Length: 298
Image (cartoon, rainbow, N blue to C red):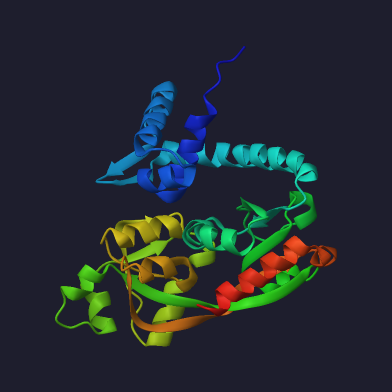
């Protein structure tokens, strides 16, 4: 029989790859920082090659790590989905809620205690599929969409909020400047970019609305995901245009501050989507009510 790698090492690898941080991965997995670190070391030892470049406290996938991530992430997602689908029939109050990973990390997780207070009888399981897909085929009850409503015409689809773009930086970077106008901030600090195709126009849209020049890209400051780019911003590596809903908690807790004018993305928003017949389910209606309240309070 072929030697199998322990699943805990693979889950740790996925979490670190998607968050860009050992600490944040430990929080996502609900384990200690040392457990994640040891799991990564064990995996790299068994594969006989490093998977990450380590820069200070940040960890970024190297070329081998990126290739490995692309190969195993879908497989682990299938394991999770298959396991959860087997449990659905025994748990009528369990809902699978889909949202992109950045929204799950920065918006959903900080609000889990609030949702538990609002609907303690409902068990939400998060899926992080991207793009348009079949809710039925993927076993998803509700999708929290960050995108275009027209892609979900086969479903009940209700707008929750505009997609607001905001330029953010660590407060200490702004405090260090004598001139804190938007143009000065962008000229003084390097711009951080997210390479994801869904994020490629964010800087351009925000700069046009704020009437400032689009900044150049710098080495080592373009990241695969918004979650990684946000972590780089919190660690004072530069400034980043991101979706305000992704960083509300960080702004509220003083980890980030906003510069310039918030800009509404003209092509996308946040939407609630589900199969039309599921609107009769009390659990779905409770989730819809709570999501509506949360987004309206932004």
